[in-house]
Image (cartoon, helix red, strand yellow):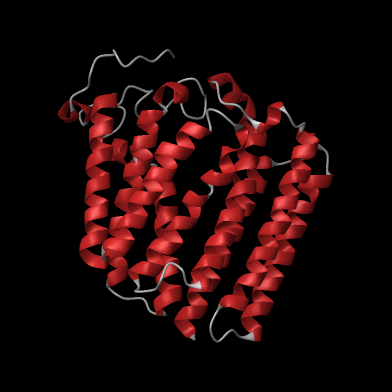
Length: 306
């Protein structure tokens, strides 16, 4: 479907009355609510690891982070609306599908960013709010433009996945230079790279057709699998080292983390050494996300119990 900014604008009040979906659901889709929830969960983990408690402040943190992350996602959808219209997996997003106009989507993204940053500033101070705004700068201004130039934009772009842990940490009163949060952030940074390149194995052709340079163009799938596996091993190694930077680390906790990583690496051994045609990329993508979820849950629960 060809998309143009000159298409007829859709007033906000009319958007809510469309038969395909309601205005509320359009906004959630524009915010990429699943991604925004994942960002929020990461920030909550940072708060719990730093404070060792689950209190009312987590509610304010969650609202602020979810809103500002949703604003960044909405702004990204505005920026990439013409590219999204060319890809099967993204053509039904609100803007290319005509559910909301580009102008209204941009307005909503700005309102969300301002509101989210204001909540973070009011409840947690300048540093936490600035970290949220820095992530928007890095994601929407640097990474979003850089990935149109090079397939390796994911490397600096992965910093956006690590910043939420710092947001949660500083919201709990910690320093963003503390070695514990720095190393947890480093682990998340490393994890982002194989996570993204798995998407390239599955959707590389669509990205290329939309005009994005992809790593698939210069590296064959078999070698790309081996590269991904190398990053999987690096991700595993970095997570195993995280306990070394925690206070009051117990042997039981370390054994649980070690066992999780053995399972993680074995799961992806087939990804590197099996045949491309035999791969279940959906299962592999789900597995790497489950691994991250389990690691963060274990990390948070441990600090609530000690």
